[in-house]
Length: 229
Ligand code: APR
Image (cartoon, rainbow, N blue to C red):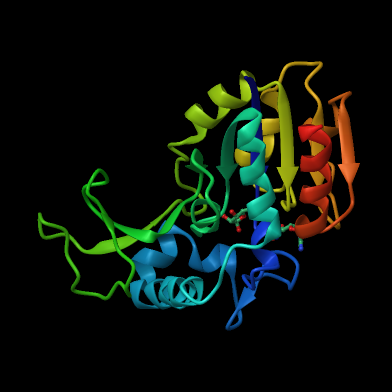
């Protein structure tokens, strides 16, 4: 089976009702996302940070995967598919994707703020006073700005072996994730589906990029149908 990697961003979940980060100015109650999603914000105001993610976690439980997520699942009949997502939602898994790498963490998990390996399935609010089994405060299992991206190595390895790369609904602005397109072999076709695509350094230097300026629900289906012919 040929290997196909899909890099997804906030845009694939937009039609499920989860707002993207940069389309609406990226503001939450007057704060820039970059000011809430950082270790510094957690140190200064953990309550605010928890509130931000608690709101997102509650919202996630009200939404459903859309046709973009579902179309990607159909590729598994012909390809060995790995979804590398920057999203912290679980919509790829709920749609049925079997192999999902979360580069930026998972909203439905909490982890110890001191012992990183203590990670828990956590579908409810995280509150100050919720502790890990060793007595340290729990935090969202999210990769904040300025933190290491532990899954990047695996994502880069899988991408370097890909026969086809799909990129869906990401502004390709946030590194290291946005650099993944630079790991594919020279002749690997890259499809970039996004209503407002932004060509970053890696895409500008690839010879095999086809841009599909469309939203995920229709654009992904179209390309999936081509790839399944
Ligand atoms: N279908 C597909 N793409 C869409 C749709 C849609 N219906 N609506 C918007 N988009 C596109 C936008 O054109 C934009 O290119 O989704 C992209 C969203 O970009 P960002 O908001 O920058 O999200 P993303 O690229 O995922 O951000 C990367 O930054 O804030 C951090 O950690 C966070 O994982 C996130 C990372």
